[in-house]
Length: 398
Image (cartoon, rainbow, N blue to C red; front, side, top):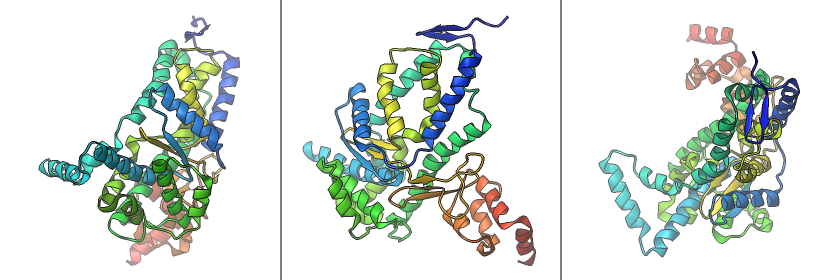
């Protein structure tokens, strides 16, 4: 005999009704659309939501700076975090050079890469974990406790295969995967003095403006506009400008962005479940009050770097191109592009390098396939784009 449907502010049990299924389907579409948001954010509203998130987490109000793209969040966050670390040491009467030498010696004695321990100390200050624990994990735990298994499973049913794919690729690949790969490549080039790390002039100058804003407490749009017209800098030069001889530490800290970052609208699939339990099933839990600030942040902006002194938040992409299944996809250019020019490329939902998309199929040499490893998703897209017959012919003739 089916379990009775129970709906109370503190309990949702017994599965879902047909009416609720329809509403859950609409709710899923709303959050899917949120994951694919483009255009400019309301900067004042996003800054207010972030300040509220810090407030409900019992943290001091930060300086909030909205920047053009996730890559600026990552690079400016790492550099600004080290700048603030140096200021704290100076206020405590300590020498950052001696501190780095001491921790480097500890790293060497334990076979750690030089400076990694210090970079982790700078990046992992706990602010990100505090806000997540207060606002997201708290309501997640309370929601799970207030829903029985049948109802909890049923709330995911309206998200059919295409919507699941759309949300998954819009979040995990377009941001986390994209930021990881692009950042690692950029930092590797910058720390070796290479030129591959050069983005657009606007991206670099927006980074400089973001760091200035984070350290000066200024969020002047005029400063950002003036900076966009200046000469481009490499990432290493930017870090050196603010950190001097410790510029590599800023880049290493940026490489640990995942310790400090939250996903914003790019993690919409997580918010769907929590808001569906509240808005469709009628749960009204005490933790929802604090969650409200987190939810607003998820709707108003993208990736954000959480730090005790500042918060850098990314704007939405200028565009996201998709295929008929709702997967990020473009065969002629980036699938995602932000206003500063930073981009990521996808084919049928698979994160791929720029050259695979923007080089004509006839110009792609089959010997590039090992770079992608043919058994990976990117390798499969290579084979699909170039054609198995051409790859076989090139292999036979080589």
